[in-house]
Length: 170
Image 1 (cartoon, rainbow, N blue to C red):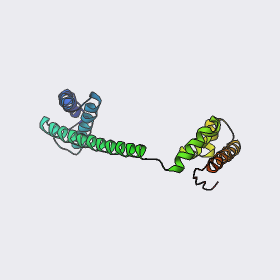
Image 2 (image 1 turned 30 degrees about the horizontal axis):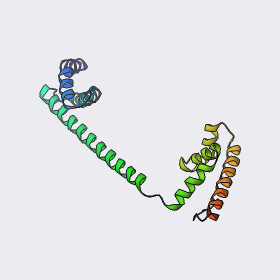
Image 3 (image 1 turned 135 degrees about the horizontal axis):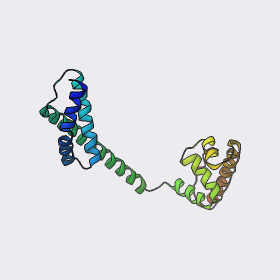
Image 4 (image 1 turned 90 degrees about the horizontal axis):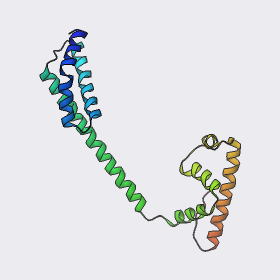
């Protein structure tokens, strides 16, 4: 089949396939994607010398829609599992050290908290922090060191008040 023949098949059956896809999927964008994939497969079949009939196009569309259903189901399962895992972690009781560290962090000024969060919770490099905050990497290193010292001091004070704390290494 020539390019002109494929174009005629496309023009003749696109709306029909799109209507079928829209009825089976939620959303025009998903339906358009499925029909585009169907015609991509048809283009390859045409290039390989295969015949393009409405019956073949419809069967291919059904298979592509089936693949889309399975993809959506897998994505839904993944999101459900990830959400359950996240909720489970958030509802799990925090260990005592984490509670003490959070309490100490709340006592720091905002600049110290921010740089500590960026370095340890968000796992940004000194260069990335410097770029975000508009400092040099050396300045970030010094600020981070000072923030850790202030945090450590707070943790020692809390420890003297009777809270158990694991200080780790600097």
